[in-house]
Amino acid sequence: MQKQITEIWDENQLDVIKAGFDECILVDAGPGTGKTAVACARLAYLIEEEDLEPSNTWMISFTRTAVAEIRARLHRYVGDDALAIRIATVDSHAWSIHSGHDAGATLTGTYEENIERVIELLEHDGDVAEELNMVEHLVVDEAQDIVGARAHLVELLISKLSPDCGVTVFADEAQAIYGFAEKREDLGVRHTLQDVTPLLARLGEMKFKKLALKEIYRTSSGNLKRIFSELRTQLLRGSEDANGLHGQIASQIRQLADSSDLTWTNLKVEDYDAEALLLFRSRIEVLMKSQFAEAPHRRRLSGYSASLPAWIALCFSDYLDRYISERAFLQLWSSRIENRIASEYQPIDAWAKLLTVAGENDGSVDLHQLRRKLSRTHPPTELAIPEFGLAGPIVGTIHASKGREEDTVVLMLPRQSDFDDAEGEAEETRVLFVGATRARERLFVGSGITYTGSALDSQRAYRSKRNGPTMVEIGRTGDLNATGLVGRGSLSREESAASQQFLSISTDVMTEYSLKLAGQNLDWRYLVLRQDSSEQIAVLSKQFSNELWNILSKLGQEKSRKPPHKIRHVKSFGCTTVAIAPDDVILEELHEPWSRSGFILAPRIASFSPVFFAKR
Image (cartoon, rainbow, N blue to C red):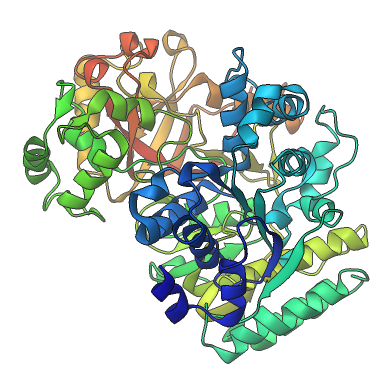
């Protein structure tokens, strides 16, 4: 470890990595300065050189994707000790404390309720204080985005640590793009906190030593480095008086980009490869561009369940033994996957991932344990697919792509608009900065369009146009479940088998389906049909039908219009795996063999389809 630190890191990075285990340091880390690598090296140094116990080191990261990346990096430094380090998001750490110290803890509450309960435990429960007293070092990543009740929670957690416990906080105020929106949301959230002071402001009242990472490593492009450094400095200096700042930064990003002549019309998703990230300000823009793209691509967007690779269901949908050996798995892979579908894994890599998630001491994989873990709302990152879609460029919002970087970034700048106040303008300017600094080699800038839309309370997006169809988002979490795929109340056993067979040859291609309103026998749900065919693939949940009525209500047309008999152009990006835990009662409603195997293929529907509401 010592040799590796000496050879790789610059002076500023070493100052952070080798700071004392009991020091409290606040690290100013702009984009591209190696923050994640330094954070991992710091933990590794503390374990290897300062002899800290891995299980007594904690790390709070902003996203589950970052958690997976950090754990993988740490494994290269400290081997299996990385598995003992408690690396998780704020919410995951909160749930760990909640479930470990509250016998009545359940997953039925909201994230905010979970945070509130943990704040109470931190303030009043002696057992929690005793657990925190064992922590030897805490690392907090992306501190600028921890706001509201979560900021209060982290502040309280830090205050309850042992006086000998060190804290390392990484932050970049120029990338703080969640505070303003969070403040508005917090106004409607009941918690014990009256103010919504962000974590960085709270830390300013504590005794933290300030360090900075200065050298930019993400890119060798001179113009990109100017965006990363000069524009960042300007942005930070201009935060106090933000009037006109948005326009200034947008103009300079255009000047420093490799090209700035893109428009909504000439931006074609199919012109970019898998190393490209196409960024938009709003969900509506992403949905519209994705819907009319002709080439396979991936979406990075909120509102969709974690996607699991189709090969899991292809291998195990009719495998009924509880355990599987490596040899048996490789035989399944050879007969069902090899040369039949595109997979990013080699079979030995897929097996290694299965072992990591549900391996046994004898070298086999426990499929019951695998099902339990994959059926969670947040399945293990080893197998979850971070983007929703097929191999190709990523199309997403700037917010959802924070922390991501690619060789080529296309940034569609929103049109200049008026801002209600300086705070709103400052945050919107930081959004532009975050988008521009995702690029490693090339940055192309274009002009977005004013695609406005609306959303239900469930966040399902829709866009109504006078004398035209209403574009409606289809494929959100809950639209399609196991009973709609192979349930006895939805399709016959023969229909289910035929559907699963069709999906098995459609796992890695874009497919269009149509929806047909079923009768009262299916509770007026929508059948998913093969395009221009009567062959049934699945039945959508009642959630989707109900929300079509909700959209009509929002449009003030519930008395004059009704949901249509048919919806066409429903786009699907190949297939995903649905996993069901062995003790889930829903298994009783499914056909064989899926009721016993617990693995089902599902179309990966992600559409923004035109809906023509019918006259009543």
